[in-house]
Image (cartoon, rainbow, N blue to C red; front, side):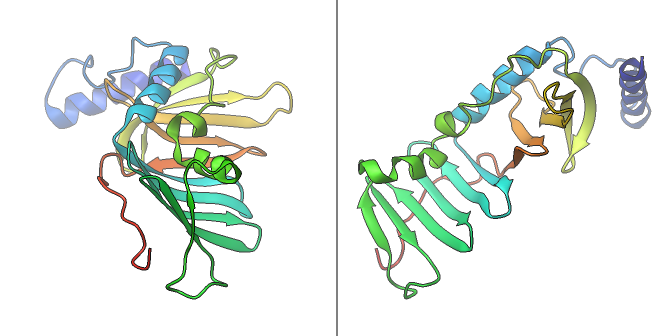
Length: 205
């Protein structure tokens, strides 16, 4: 009942501000199930030309990476007390920490087995592989606003530990992920869709 009330209020708000009488276009995902929304948002995010993902399971293990499909990625990875700057472009991966001279970067071929786990963070398909709609069909769906844009939040409580979780996606015909959050598991935020087109090597690379 609360969800129905919220949808009605959202419809009224659109009607009053935009001068329209219908609510069909205010929520493009209204007819989609929770499972469909999660599945489509995951697929659309993986297929996006570019986006930035930030966050992680803890402050001591987090990422802030801009990923460009077919190009690579650039950004930082925090592991304990060490912050790595990472650039993956073409067939080469560059890495730098504060302990290194500013113009010196470690480099390795992207095919090197030792760094596959690292660059998996730069592959949307690998990064989002654990995300599944399985078991979330009963999540409560709420029309909301996230970072200033229309969004749909899917909220649930994990039956194993009673912890709340949420997935927020854009409220568009082709939804993409905006946030994944669950206490104890971490928080990931997705921004900057389509804003980056290329990845450049470091100046000293």
